[in-house]
Image 1: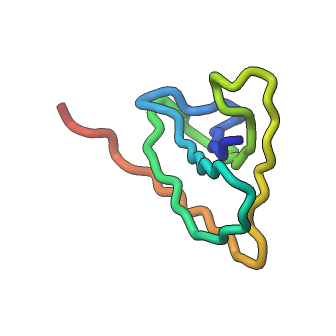
Image 2: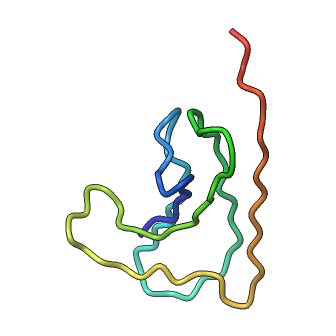
Length: 87
């Protein structure tokens, strides 16, 4: 499974999705912290609803895996509005 951000219910596509994937090939119980970072362009002005979602990875068909996360931890989201780059 993958974790990904949406803005106003739409996944970012420019310059790329903001997502994270952790692969583990055997059934062991590892706890680790992670960061998911990225930039998204083309978001309309005004109020923006940010979502943090879990979904299937592309290329794995109908396969379902667990997406267990967050045990005994605090999750934080930091969002900044930044000026677009000057060409």
